Length: 100
Image 1: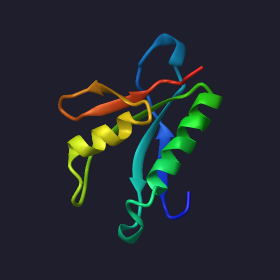
Image 2: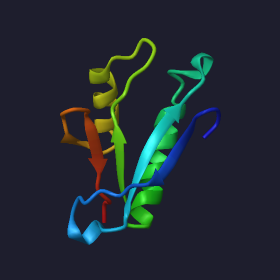
Image 3: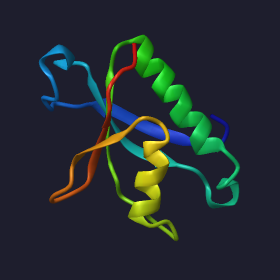
């Protein structure tokens, strides 16, 4: 999506029996510094959600901020795309189950 990029891998984690083998982990989301706050990450996450729903895949990610963004801000951002906290310790993990 424009200058935004991400990396998605298979995730070997058991969320629910009906999602066995259907979990993908977003291991990174990157928007170049000069392109931030222009909607690129929003467009990318909307697209990932559409693709995940189409293939009945759950998305998993670790909340890990960098730069001037706080973890709480990042959690709020991901929540806008249907992600919910799945784990809080030792790291915050969020999951988005497929929508029907």
